[in-house]
Amino acid sequence: MTIALSREAAAQRFLNIRWRGPLTRTALLLMESLWAYAFVAFFVALTGAGGKPTPLGMAAVVFLSFGISRALQQSSLGLGLLRVWGALLSFLLFYAIARVDFYGDWRF
Image 1 (tube, rainbow, N blue to C red):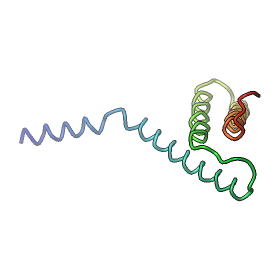
Image 2 (cartoon, rainbow, N blue to C red):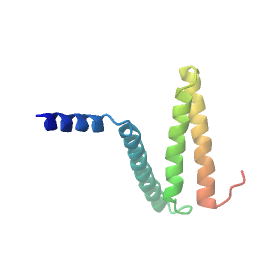
Image 3 (cartoon, helix red, strand yellow):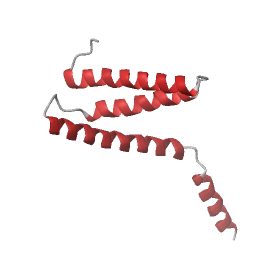
Image 4 (cartoon, one colour):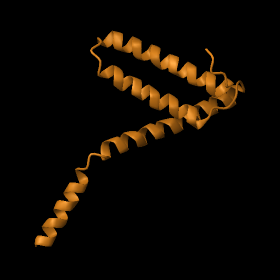
């Protein structure tokens, strides 16, 4: 009986570990990066314009946009101002990464 209780306690401690949240969030961001890459590659193939995207560039857009949104959520800005700043920063980030990724030019 004592062994069964200690196994249950060990299993409960394993389930309460704090790494599950960050691991799940990272896995979801990687999944979003993959479908965003597939969408952009499909769109570029349909239009036939520009170079092909790199998975690293798409992952940078997704992860950095997520970081911007988390940072802005912790600020004390009003909802309307938060949306404006979030959209502006995400657009600028996307422009910078797309410029480097598609054209290889880092000068803005």
